[in-house]
Amino acid sequence: WVKTADTLGGLVDKDRVSSYDLHIGVGGKFRFMINNNFLDSSTAPNDTWQFVAGVWNPAGNPDPSLEMYINGSVESSKPHLLGGPAATAGPLYIGRLTDGFYLNGLLDDVRFYGRRLLDWEIAAMYKAMK
Image (tube, rainbow, N blue to C red; front, side, top):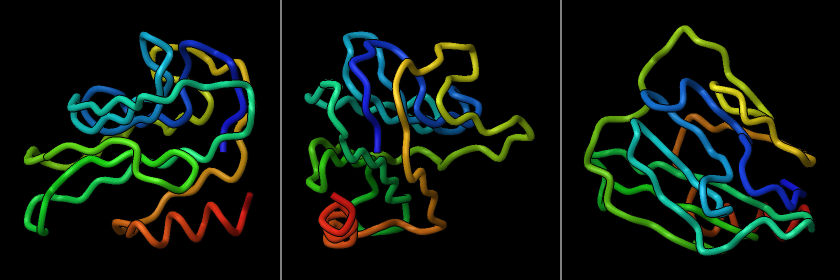
């Protein structure tokens, strides 16, 4: 969950370029990145609580892809045939990017899963928490 009207700032970042991150990118839209391959939302932060999720469906599974969900619904997706997030020794940042860009807003209930969440799981999570 994020609440901000910020136009640039990090939500979650693990070595931005070679691993993964979820942030508000240039243009003020949500951006999900894995290995410098990115996916932008059409939704911008609007200073209300928004449920934002990035999902990686790795190669070797049907339809390897990056997916972004806003408020429980898939907002954008694209094929992703590149490798997954790199294992890095760097820190995990919450509320900022590796190179700075602190979020001017609020985050709540940040979660990580060791598997791909399905559409219905994300929708149910959103409905249960809204």
